[in-house]
Image 1 (cartoon, one colour):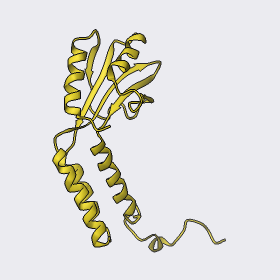
Image 2 (tube, rainbow, N blue to C red; image 1 turned 90 degrees about the horizontal axis):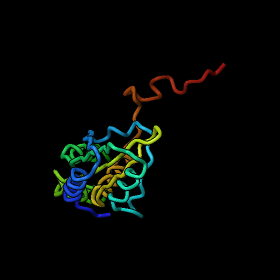
Image 3 (cartoon, helix red, strand yellow; image 1 turned 90 degrees about the vertical axis):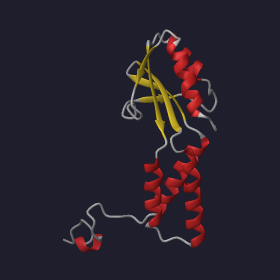
Image 4 (cartoon, helix red, strand yellow; image 1 turned 180 degrees about the vertical axis):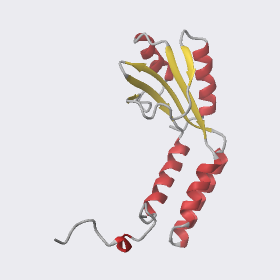
Length: 166
């Protein structure tokens, strides 16, 4: 869904501040290591219905976080792209796609609401289409990168496989 998350962020915070919920501002990604159950924002994008589920579950604290799109993300993808052996047309396509993302610098690229219930976190997450496209571009670039040994050496220089010829 192509959302303006900057406006949605303001709307959600106003709604939460006027509600009976306690607002806990968490850092983006703080819930990533928790057992999560994600809300289907494609079928039911209205955050108020998500918060109604929290209300019916008698939850009082709502976790909220929002993340801005930063230039470091584009820089990292551009640096990875520079190390690839691509045709001129492919390289230009990726460069154009990354350049197009620059117009979104500073915009909210991910917004998350959550509540805890029975040792699980129920999460409403939203990201705009442009950010999904950016992540897809990054995944494509990463898939084109040659595999590297974490030890920084050619695997053959280490004596080949890790099995015995005995």
